[in-house]
Length: 384
Length: 255
Image 1 (cartoon, rainbow over the protein chains, first blue to last red):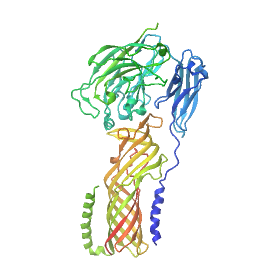
Image 2 (image 1 turned 180 degrees about the vertical axis):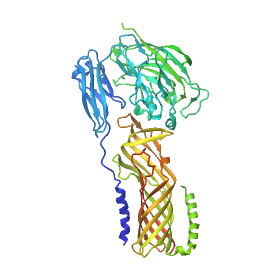
Image 3 (image 1 turned 90 degrees about the vertical axis):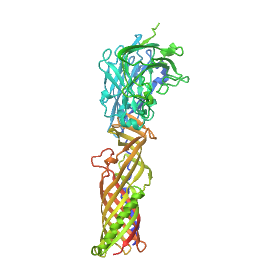
Image 4 (image 1 turned 120 degrees about the vertical axis):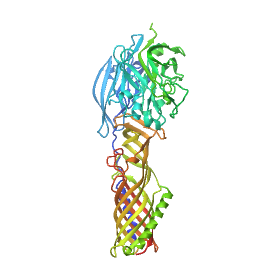
């Protein structure tokens, strides 16, 4: 009869095993992770070898390539090479590409499990020529992102064509404060600015999620570059990718601002720092976007003002608090001579940065600090 | 649950037994026992979803079982056993998941999405359990039992964190956010307050007498109620407590 007893653990084991592991499910992701354009003689079409390929952020669905104005390749014969998340399949749903002026390819990517899809546009176009010596940023072209959580700002060239979007930390803020309304985000529009709409940057509390990871505040920011959501929680400094290729020599940054520091400055642990008043930041940086070995360089939050790649900085320094719209004008301070050939070869990138708390990237600042900016002008050296 | 609380409970139960022993008429054909054991098992979905890929680690928890039981013989073979025990059905495990629906909640703010990576879960469930078993005496030494149990939870904890992977915010097409391995970069969750106070299920087991008053037992407690309230959706599947206990029982009063 003893054997009855020994069957008990076996019975238990059999019942427990009914919860055993199943076959691996098919992948549900449907991203383009990398795009490249192949030509036989890439430098006759692209300015730099690194311009022929790019990684795609999970939040992007438009991938743009810029080629030489005198590109050798027939752009209509190019075929983008896509890398996808494992198992996904891409179908080109259409294309309109001219041999000289470029155009767009449209893709639908379907996940391995067939349940999810994403639409992408890959674009190729000759580098736009800046015809004016002054670049205008008026912050008039903003809209809610597709899911309606927060605003995005488009940058339009003087001829009205799109030059991408202003980057900001709103996507990161949405992770911690999913309940916030669009106007409660750190970066929001101000409908009645100095001249039409302005942008309003406010240092906000990141709520219970933020407190728990000692990232208690989110400064309102706006910059030329991209915001990489993937790093937002693990390495916030690496989430801000500063700069876009710029082929003119910037001399002066001007605009109008108002600034009110918040009442209580706090350190990363949320402790009040009694003798400190919050500071805003307004600056622009021009840097070489390739190192001496020819590797592409992007500046991040931790080196945007200190990298040896920097060629010129225009930094306002102290942003004096003012309730009235106040003009500012900052000259670029060149640390080294600019190489005009390299400038033509897309060898320089420019970023312009506005932040309601200068040390917001260290999660220090005062909740409520508000910087409004409008009618920004980047004045470049006249071309001979 | 500290050792002190367990001791206090044992002391509280013993006088109750002493009083009962004096109620002679009722005690005819009645056997009284106490038992001490250990629970091993987990709170798990029944029918593992494909999104759970493998178990990385499993850590034993202080899952003591301490109780008393009264057995009323109905005839030579059959009896009815009513018990009262305090026990912990705790678990700590780390599992690999792929595209697993997760919600991280903190102070009213919620972050939901599909997570691929590792998830650590720690569960503590101290409870008072009343088992009611039908006993079948197979031999002089060996008996089998089966029957329902009802548990009242006195301490509930269901916490954990998603780590070393990435979250797709909302659904698989949402923004991809990397989660790290340390406290500041992982995604913690705490669903303790969403746990039910009452659990019930079915016991199966047996007991083998090895000495005059001493027996060893094994028992499987199969939970039929999920550990969370029915409206709880943060975890993809309903989790059931499925634990096996082994231990020693000691006969306090002979029939």
